[in-house]
Image (cartoon, rainbow, N blue to C red; front, top):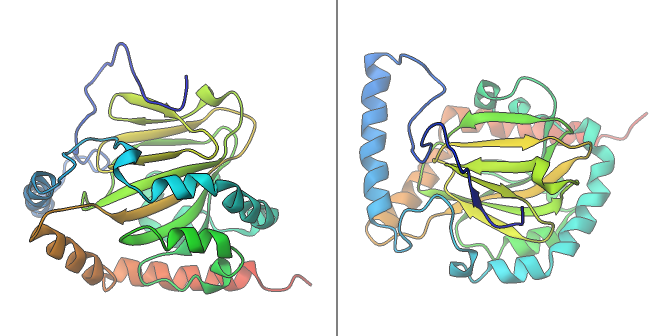
Length: 265
């Protein structure tokens, strides 16, 4: 398997959908909310000049090539902070909603940017990474996503299709085919220095069935849209910073950052 996508030859179920799958038997209020979200997401999809694929052609994003060209600079900064991996927070330590798909400590995060987050201490140790992140239009979240050997992230979907996700392979253990992500019915194995852009509101699942750590630069950024939906999407992202769960995540990130860089005695 190369760094391009491959289709599952015999899918048991067509997983190219945005259905909410983690919460079974939602009550009427949640069903109403899901229905309204589905309507908005259909409008966002229709306003996309790049269509509504689950995996995007990175050539449609001119800022990707320079990031891939300088990926080794990101890797050098990652190597320096990986020394502190055991002291880093697990994802659910920052965002409690992630506990729906992770309860162990095998998905670590090193936040560089986030809505309503102060990541300055982390960011100043990765200046080249931050320089490259600054070239991504509408970048809202960025961190090193670190999966331990044997880690599996179950099938789930993201929160909102006005955001797209970028993965840049930084540490990809061998054999690569055992370190993969399924997006819809297609599988992708990361390559160091190569980018993947996808819509995480499509059903997806991740495996690291190797003996090494898998690390990607994980970035969320605004989906290219026609007006007036671009305006709506930008405002929604800004308003999102006021959401209680994001304010809580910002407070947790600040505390974990202080713990991470507190001198060891």
